Amino acid sequence: MNPLDYTEAEVERVSKLAKLRLTDSEKQRLAEEMQKILEFVSLLSEADTESLHESGNCSAPQLPLREDKAELLFDRQQMLMNSATVTDGYITVPRVIE
Image: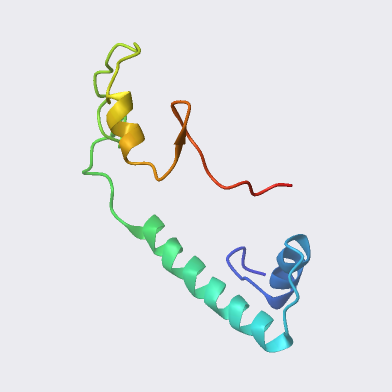
């Protein structure tokens, strides 16, 4: 058996691990789809990468971090004016737990 073959037995094993109930037609369809994905991924090994240079980091460069300090970003009174109800300087909401 080719290591890239993905069978219904594999779908069955994974579905049991994920506690999924699949019909026989779903197992067959998923096995076929997974097989197509694996075949497509195997094409990557055939790509000529000799002329490419190695990249140490594919993500964006590290951005400078700001100092972590407390700042007053909003005026408290202005924030409270946006609330429908305020009691003793705090936003109040309806009780949801009795």
